[in-house]
Every structure is written in structure tokens, then in C-alpha cells.
Image (cartoon, rainbow, N blue to C red; front, side):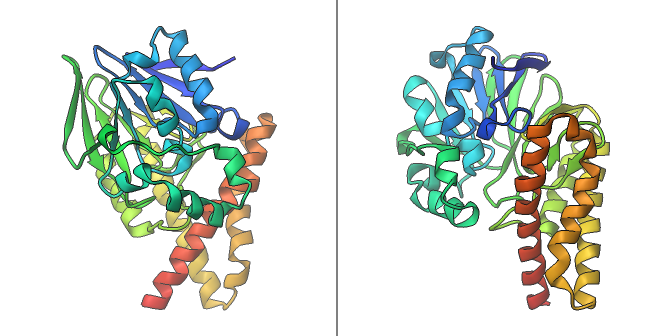
Length: 307
């Protein structure tokens, strides 16, 4: 049974049970005079998204916008599949992401090269988005969903160069995609640092930019809403700093080969409160954290080779 809940006025969080794991992926539905989905999850999550919408009385035909925070397949992979069911909808995307939605061939190949052939089963078929269904947006552009709900786009690189965050005026909140890391409960906040294009310095700049907006709440893709906004930002920045310190010490000692194990151990200890949700815990420890550690190590090694 789909888990959907109202996390702020007229904003609903749908657990899209991404990769069949509860508590890892969120799609957000904004239910105003105009209606929008923030991300879609992969194609394999589409039935859950549609079921969640139906539970709060929103039909696919009601959707005006699908806003892709970025084009990673766990966020926007289902857009092309859902669009035929949403004839009024435009897909909102960063300029650097549009071509990959129109032709996802390279995007799928990149994900398979990083995460393996099993990725295809996890994400499902990635259906191209017709060019005339795409609306490219940039920093500061606005979408009017009603008299009290204006959405404003925020360029938010670092996790990926094609990332958008979305400010919503009704509740003074920000949909962060992966730009502000993951939030898995109070005290469990981490950066998201995957291959191939994570950049720690740019990521930190985006975190500081978002913090300066002083939002009242964040709607995090992985996973859920929080009003402990500044605490979350500081925790993610601190985690990045600790990762960098570990990497610097390992490099100085000539032991970069063991860095992955140290970073994973550092984060696994902090994730102990999740053990009450064994499937989620195992996914995060066995997949999400190693994936992010790999991205950080690549970034650090490239930065060292340049300096």
C-alpha cells in the first residue's frame, strides 16, 4: 500500500519505493490550482506514483508540470513513461539535462557503466521525452501554480551540473533533489557524492547558497521533509569536511587504497539507528554509501592530480 502524506500545506510526499526499498526515495506532489510533481522516480516506480496521486484525488490529467531536479534515472527516469498519461504536463529541466531526456541513450549507458547491467532491471525502460514536451529553465525563473504558490528555480550544481532546486512560496520551503544530500531521520544527514561529476567545492557552495535563503523546511529526495534546516546543512558540510580530512591523511601516508574502507566505516557507524529498518539499512550500507564513496575518491584523486 502506497505511503503518501502531507508534509506541508498542499505538498504531499510519496514514498516511491525506489528499487523496492521503502524509505529511500521521495517524489513530491504539489496540489494547488496548478499541480506539479517534483521528480518521478524511475519507470519501475510509476505505478506507485499514480496510486499515490489517486489517494489524494489527483488524476494524471491534472498534472501541469513534472519538474526534474536532475536527470539521474532514480529521479527522472520515469518521466517519459508517465507523460502520455499526463497530456497537459511539461517537463521542467535544467538546460544541461534536456538533451538527455530527449535521447537517454548516453545517460542509460553511463548509469550501466557505473552501477552495472543490473541497473536496467532496477530502473526499467527509460522512455524518451518528446522535445515539444520539455521546458528548459534557469536560475530565478518562476512557475505560477496559484495565488499563494509560486515556484522559483535555483541552479544547484555540485552533486550534478544539471541540478535544480525549487523554492516554494506557500510554506517557504525548498525541494532539494540531491543538492543538499540525504536526510534519513534526525541526526542522519550525509552528502551525496556519486560518479561521474561530483564536485565537493561546488557542492559546498550550493549548500551555503541554499542555507542563505533561510527556508523553513526542506523536502529531500532521499528521504523526507525536515524543519531542522540549518542543522541539516551544517551536518552535510561537516561530513564533507571529514571526508576530505580522511582523504588528505590517507594521501599523505601513501594509503589511498584503504580510503574507501575508512570512509564506509565512518558513515556506517552513524547509520546504526536505521538497523530497525533492515532492508533500508542494507541498501544504504551496501549500495548507496559505497557508490558515494567512489564518487568522492574520484573527485579527490582528480583534484590532487591538478594541484
